[in-house]
Image 1 (tube, one colour):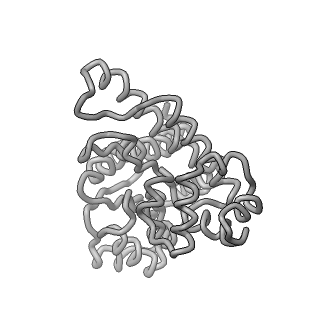
Image 2 (cartoon, helix red, strand yellow; image 1 turned 90 degrees about the vertical axis):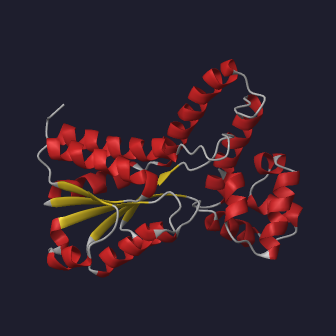
Length: 256
């Protein structure tokens, strides 16, 4: 995930130089704290901290833990599927990739955010979901599950301004889902927040724009994990987050 962030986020020349040093000497992250790494890369410690925050981490320590975990995993298990992979390779590797996606998403989950969002869901008279393309099927499923619990829920692939203008903002809780954070759902989220409606984002570290607009956000794993081009499994993360919230609602309503 961190390597993909390096290639996705716009970096300053100084930050690009820092990335080059990290790629050439990944063991430095394991060995050094922010001050020591700054000395090795000829930048200030504050530059190191700002760089890690730009990537979406709380600070250097948060970045360091994630980097070490990913680097260790990458070097202890080859989970890349390529043109030379056998059927047995795919059978063995794919479940490991699925597991890593779910584990990475669970590591990003914050209990206090879950508790707040569940409370918002319990208070809301209506729960709306917004997503498009491949993500739309996940929110349709979530809406059906919530309706089975007696909770009014709807799924939309675009926003209806007349509808949003007509409801009382405090009555409706909206979930906006986008793994990229920069498509039509961004426009939807901005309009909802402009109308003072409470919005929950489900997005990734690839782009922080959606996260900044929403009241609360869940971060999913949108990494490729060595899968062939065109095979995206971030939907696993989305399904995990939605099912977690739905199960919590079932517990609250004693419907398990």
